[in-house]
Amino acid sequence: MEFPDDNPEIPGFNLICPECGIANPDDAEYCLVCDRDLTKILLFFEDDFFDLELTENCIIEYRKSFWGTRRTGKVLKYPLTEISNIEFGSPITRFKFDFEGKRRVLPLREENMKSIKTLLPKLIDC
Image (cartoon, rainbow, N blue to C red):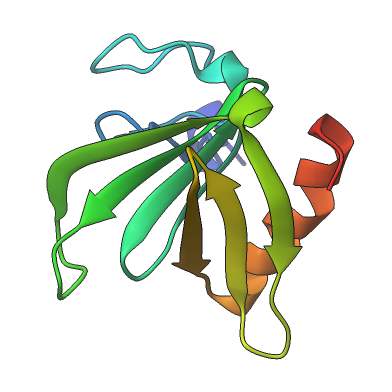
């Protein structure tokens, strides 16, 4: 005989809040801790030197320490309307673009490069 509690379906907590880093249920609209609206996040990934978030309007870079173990508190926002000359480096995975007259180069893991390379052209001309 099986009881309903024998096989409880555990919800996935794979939706990471870029603001505070807390895992939320996959279907959450707002962060459980900081109440950030998670529906506006198109892409978020953690990389070696930074965490990167992509929304409809901007790319947000959350800088990490040299060793990549924790965030420094420095947050850089790049509005999509103000970036240009986008390049996706290959075979070395570097995401490059111009912002405010300076060239920005972000080294990415290969799987993260594939994600942003797929999604970004749908938002702006690359």
